Structure formats: structure tokens, C-alpha cells
Amino acid sequence: MRVISALALLAVVLGSSSRAKEPDLAELVASARAALGGEAALRAVTAFTVDGSTSRQLTSITTSEHFEMSSVLPDKFLRVSRRAVGGPMSFDTIDTVGFSGTTPFRSTETNGPFPIPQPPPSPVRSTPEEAAARELKGVRRTFLETVVPLFIAAPASYGIELTAGGKVPLGKGQADAIDLKGPDIGNWRLLLDEKTHLPIKIVWKAKPIVMFSTMMTTTTTTTSTVTTRRGEPPVMPAAPPPPPPVMTMPVGDPSANLDPVDWEMTIGDYKVADGLNWPHRVTTTFDGKKWEDTRIGKYKINPKIDPKKFERRK
Image (cartoon, rainbow, N blue to C red; front, side):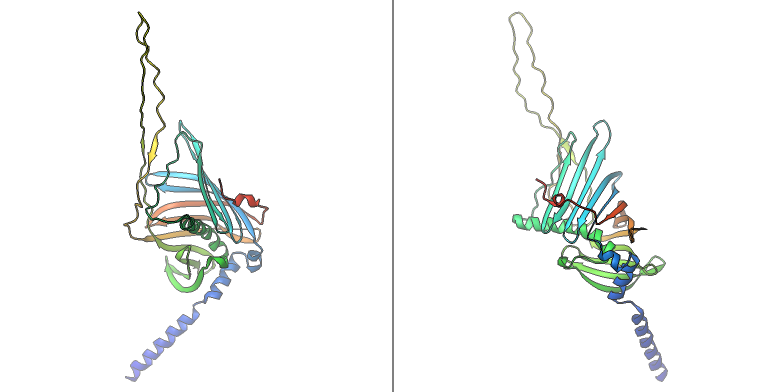
């Protein structure tokens, strides 16, 4: 009995000692911010711009786009993405998304031959204020996916809570985890490399992406008048040009009955510039499937940005 008690006591002591070696939240954040460039360099950043390219896997089709991001911390953000479609009817599509304070904006423009398909109205009844709040939440999430790995922090007004998540297995080793919780992101787990302390992954659970094909239909209604002249054959009017195809969208939320799956955003290719060690490649997967591969260009720190860039598009 004494041997058993001694072994039990030893196990408790060893367990306590092991837990004591795990860094707390302050240590995790401090080590990560030091690896990203240091406290002074990060605190000096008040605005930044960056460009890059993203390829996206849509079943058997891969699309690519060029993007430009601008941000004035803490509450102004803009992302403009340009997609080029080649072939005999080449055209460009420009997606703009962002917010200024609590005002979100989103728009899509194209110079193509077809009208842009519009999503069906939401089945959830809501006031204009509630709809704007949902849109703001979505674009804020895009912003936070960008800034959290750069600063290991979020502006206080976003209500993001950070807690130490301990050691978690990762590949053949383990990583240090920081758990984040907030109204715009739900629950994230940020993983830091155990040796370099750099952010290497953000994981969360969410509904999967549902991909579908649109159907293009045409509707033609014409009234023709045949004219004749004495002794001559009838004159047939010229056929009117066909109307442009209309792309139809599915009704309702196609992921409504699907369970949440694992999402991962892998962060890497760190390069030092202007005193900051920031990532230049981000790859996103869901349910083990590759979704986005983003290659980031040069960051510009504290550039002059026209405030009008963040105004709602008309």
C-alpha cells in the first residue's frame, strides 16, 4: 500500500511539473510577437497594404485572382479582387469587400457579356439593420483572418478573448495553442511553432463549401409582322437578336442540413522586411479538401491611404 501511494504521489508531482512547464497566455503572446518582429515594430504599425494572388479549387476547375488589401487600424479594411476569364469572350470581374467603422460594403462588377447572378433573398426575415450586422460580421472575419496571424492580437472593440490552449499534437511533434473566441469568429485555435514561436495554423469548425453549376436560360417573346407588295413576295422582318442568357441560382442555403467540418488555414513562407517577419503564403482546406492557396506579395507599412477608399460603394 505504501508503494502504491508513493507511486501515485510521484505521478501527481510529475503531472504538476509537466503542466507547470507549459507557457501561459502572456508568455505565448510575447514569444510570438517577438518572432514576428518585436513589440516596438508591431506597435508602430498603424496601416498597411499588401497585394497577392489566390487560386481557388472549384471541383475540377481552378480559378485565380489578383487582390489588393488596405487597412487603417483598427477599423478600416478593404479587399479588391480581380478575376480574369479568358476564351473567346474574355472579361474581368471585380469583387470589393470591406468596412469602415461599423459600416460594411460589398460589390461585384464585370465587363462581361452576361449579367452577374444574384443570390436568392435570405430565407430569414430581418430588418435592414440586422442584414447590415450580418454583412459586417462576415467582412470583419475576413479582416481578422488577416491581422490575427500578423499581430497575435485584435483591436479591443472586436471583443476577442484569448486563452492559453496548452500543447497539442501536430505532425511528428507538438505546437503551442492559443484559443480565440469572439462574436465575429466563433471559436478559433491558433497554433504556434514550438521552436520558432511563429503562427503556423488556425483551425476551426464550420459548414463546408457547397459547389454547384449555374444554369443559363433564355426567354424569347416576339411579335412579327409580314408585309407584302402587289406582285412581290412577302417581306419577312429581320429576326431580333436573342436576349442574353440569365444564370439562375439555387434557392435557399445548400449547406443548411450539413454538419460542421474541420477547417484549417496553414500559414508560412515567412520573410523579414521593414523589421517585420510576416507570412507570404496561406493555404486553406476544409474537410481535408484544398480550397484556397494565397501567395502574398510585398507589405507596405504605414503608407498614405486615401480615407475615401473605405467609403461605401454606390
